[in-house]
Amino acid sequence: MNRFSQPDTAGHFGQFGGIYVAETLMTALKELADAYETARRDPAFLAELRHHLKEFAGRPTALYHAGRLTEHCGGAKIYLKREDLLHTGAHKINNALAQALLARRMGKRRIIAETGAGQHGVATAAACAKFGLECVVYMGAHDMQRQALNVFRMRLMGAEVRAVEAGQKTLKEAINEAMRDWVTNVRATHYILGTAYGSHPYPMMVRDFHRVIGQEAREQILARENRLPDEIIACVGGGSNAIGIFFDFLEDPDVRLTGVEAGGRGIKRGEHAARFAGGKLGVLQGCKTYLLQDPDGQIELTHSVSAGLDYAAVGPEHAFYHERGRIDFTYATDDEVLEAFQLLSRLEGIIPALESSHALAHGIKRAKALPKDKLILINLSGRGDKDVQQVEGFLGKPACSTFA
Ligand SMILES: *Cc1c(COP(=O)(O)O)cnc(C)c1O
Image (cartoon, rainbow, N blue to C red):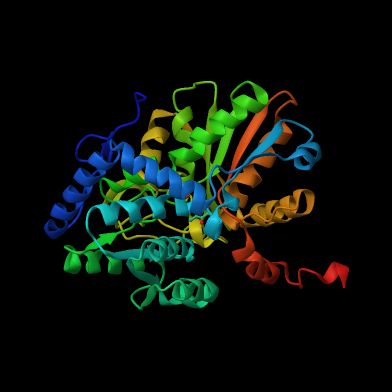
């Protein structure tokens, strides 16, 4: 294992991470940490997970040479890791499947989850349907309106979607409700958290379940180019797709790792979700990390064109590598993201998720700045089918008007 990798037994990555929950949840987290510790060493568990990732989720995903995008940028050669091709449309199924298997192994037949845009909810609902587990998804009432189609998808697959009416009625409140449910029903219930965030062991465990992205990409690029990429770029919400592709390259100092946060309408209070461009150390929802907060420590409102990156805190392991200088962080604004979204669609016939378009927007800038013998690998974390209606609205005209 690499020298950066493991948090201490209380889940600290340096000064970040840890366990900040009510006493009633300590037992559940300990039980989960123990179960995960044995599962990750059990060849039977790992073999079963590998089987489902292949047969159900569609792994391995392709490494794709974006030839026309490369030509358009005129610089470094661009590769995309195609997590958008996975079942349910994004990397989230890697983690949802693995945690559902772990829950079954722990004898827990009831699953709860939070969801913002609905992608994690859909992945969890699919995994629960597959394994015959009861599934309850908490979702802010406001998000349920914005993402009505994902609500319908979850219900089709047998999940119960519960509307959360508190506060802003979005992701943060949905997580609070899920934690409340877990405290009450802990004996028979497992909480499938959707990103590399929260109290230990979640950040470490979710990371491990997404490491397959980087492991595959490493093999694939070595086979294609006979060397490692010069830079890997991924978008960062909670941080799961990014840490998943970065992790197995942390020990390669010549591979630059860049995380791209949501720059929204620019770095002004309440207008973005770039935690490393204005956040401060604090504790939110079980975890110590960089947060967007006002001078009194109240959580700031955030904004992003992509719901999946619109959260006030960042995964603790990213905060740690930021401090150590191993991962660079930058942001892309809504306008840059909408540009990248359209460019990839037009040049490559691939419609990316708005979240992934953040990584693309920065990757395009970097490709233009670097010479042709450099290699850039961009994690295409998900597909954009869920976003086309919203983008049509932003562009202020029907998406097909040019062809009418
Ligand atoms: C949820 C989501 C993200 C953001 O979550 P991370 O945990 O930061 O990866 C990014 N891309 C897509 C497609 C998503 O659905």
